[in-house]
Image (cartoon, rainbow, N blue to C red):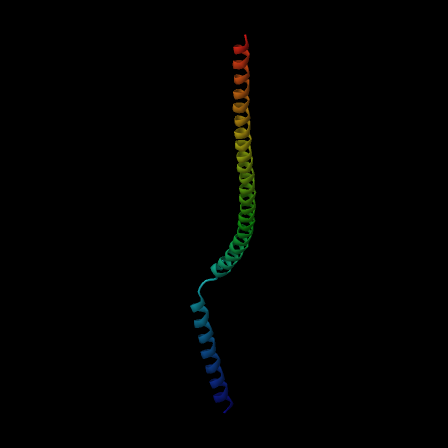
Length: 114
């Protein structure tokens, strides 16, 4: 009876070995590069890069917004100065024209006196 039990055990072990060998064959040859890990590593690097780029673009947009606001203030100041200069020119023009009228009348009167 010992032989029968040993025969069954050897049979079971042989089936187990065949099953394991079949599993190994299904796995195929070992892959030197594991694409899933490479892809994951690339995605992590890409994500880190995109995060840095996004931060820089956010900084760039903030700088452009500040730059634009400063230019608008500067432009507003230039328009205010332009309006002030127009007013000054109008005042000077009216002063010049009023002075021209006065001397002309004086010169006319001076010429008449002669």
